[in-house]
Length: 355
Length: 80
Image (spheres, rainbow over the protein chains, first blue to last red):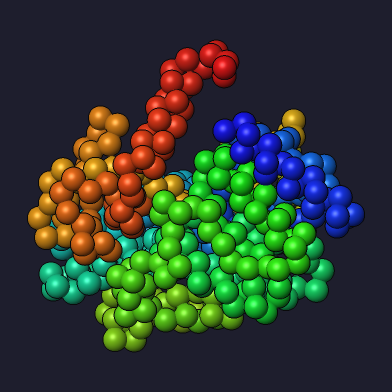
């Protein structure tokens, strides 16, 4: 293993020397962010090679307006909110889901459990907080399919699902970006396939390398990026061969395409991203919480002083935010990058201060 | 959010399955892998199998998880 790490490191050193400037690689997956910190990977890289944490944490990019809607729904006596655990601590204007005493919020581990809650509580409307990238979206589609099959009248989803490639596009079209390459998410790629990154490579000439989450995978992924940068031939490549294919998971993609359609929704810190958010198609509007509760649009809200947006774009490191470690800590978070266990700020706070 | 766990399918009916990994058993759906069958090892994310995995790969991840558990139980143990 040491030999492979050394091989990768040689590529990195050679690239730094050849390019003669700082190399910036953005990782767009919250699980990569944490793995990089937990394994001290930054300390194993040459000084000229910088890893930027991108908007790869679905909790972190959920607009505050969305949180405010979930809190509003959770306060209703006729609702049960079913949510993945990582959403409950994100603070909105009137607190977080966790802070509510109404008892209407249930943490679930799968969308299946949300459908089950609807079956068992026919007198309440169960709203599934459907957040996550393409890895999690098929599960929401299956939940809607199940609800339809079971003839449930009291189940709906509040879709905040997002797509990774449109965000990558926006990041690279931002004038001041410094991104030389992307380290692409492992499990999103299981679903969408590596071919999905080809348009990014073609349009912007940046390498897109998919790696798994173990430290050796990440280090070899960075090595491969450096090899491509030296050769000047950017391409999509996966080194996570155990799980990722060019075409992805067809059954999962078919479900996403059948139930959802992209629109220009708000991403925290990045604003409206063209085709970056998913909503249920009109034929499934019966299961759409927006329609069910007559919510027109989820408005973007801004937390003054919070610089999560710049952190998410890799423009600043968390410590450069005035609130980091002071007004904003994991115990009392202001922005989602500190709330989510996979947020850059939380990772930096927990692991990064010596790096 | 992207965390996924490899697990072996031990029971299956339609697209509902029971999987086994690291001493735990739990229910999942195999809706996204229509060809899945008993004894396959799958990668499970948020209650759904998202792909099949070969045993070698799964073992690597299980070993990593066990290592993490070990450090959790023995916080003073230093890595070798």
